[in-house]
Image (cartoon, rainbow, N blue to C red; front, side, top):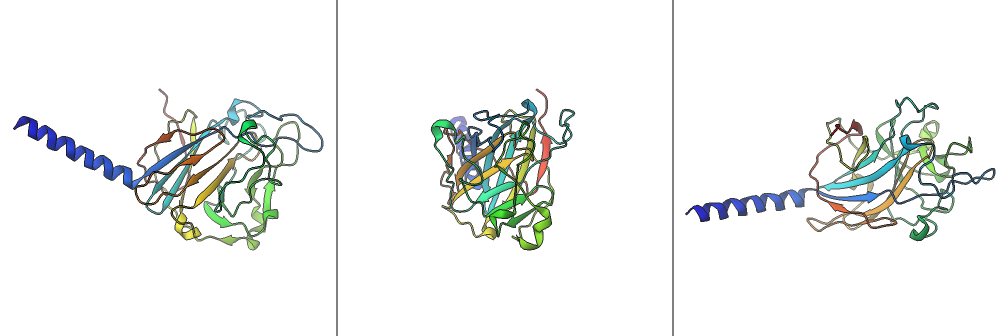
Length: 262
């Protein structure tokens, strides 16, 4: 009798776990992407993943799918209010490619020569300041780092230029504020973006490229995920394989949270 009860409890727990897995699927994109850091005036920074100090370190990007919502959490040590952020850099926008991810170069050198001119073309961007997803109608409307050659990574998409908003279509993505749990990827802060991907014309099975960086471009992260179908597992493509994790979260906002001290 006792054994039968234990068995029932086990089966009930297993069923609940399966329901949880089908409700939310996540993949971690590790920061193994470097990206180009050169410009016509200097080669300073080529081959370096992080420029300007550890406060700009990006550790990873966690992507979770729950029904039609895609949640992208960028884990980093960067925050605008940091006392060493002397030039007042801010969070960049989350760029999205709906037709896969095609960076210039190879995984062998972490795509260190990939930039906005020879790499992926992005169809959408989540504006970190405005809190909306916008359609990029012209690639020329992307703000690319091009000044202060000794401080910043050049040639990287950072933000959609706000003063050109009249020429950019609002994608009509809804969002509300909510609390968020920290990702636990190692960094101090989480930047979380939640998108109803169906409203962007994205379907199950589509491969999505993702790109994020702070406004100085000092550490860039890029990678690819596949939108899952039902409870089928999703995969992430990065210069080196990312680790698959399981997480059930339900946030619908862009929020920044600080990791709790151990």
